[in-house]
Image 1 (cartoon, rainbow, N blue to C red):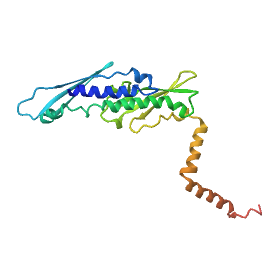
Image 2: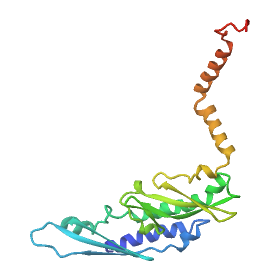
Image 3: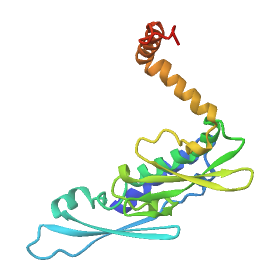
Image 4: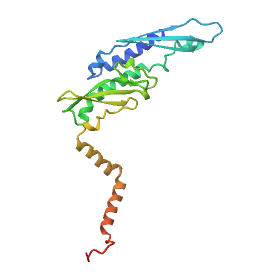
Length: 224
């Protein structure tokens, strides 16, 4: 099996696994694995490395990447995937699936599901923050740590939208913009923070207030 076919097969198996999960998102079910091709250019006499040209053709996009690889490594391991130019396609697929799940759950999790729905718009890369790329295989980024996903919080009343961006690496929740949260939710979070995370500081502050109340006035107000 050549390198391009091996990459495509690995991605196909992972996509099939995710699509067979209960409650798979409709956008995931529509996703198709791109076609990968890999071509090794003819060797130049005297050189110990070869030029490897990769291409990826998906729904509405085509990408190219080149690298140089030692001829011995190429012979033993096949063509290396261009990890310095493209994200790993399986990793991108997993992030895409996670974002779809989080976008479905986020409104209910933050108790705004009656007023808003959350819709995935795409991802932006460090080189172009203004373009949203929907297809995970078309994401243009060298590292997942730089990738940001964008979602829209759509009002169920009038269809207006507010967008928010979230770094893909370590993503566990899609928190709505503060302007969409109920005021009491913010108060509850702040109160919990005082009671649980800063209990010692809160106790010292209460003690300080009590001590201040017990102080005698520095000015005699009885004659006023």
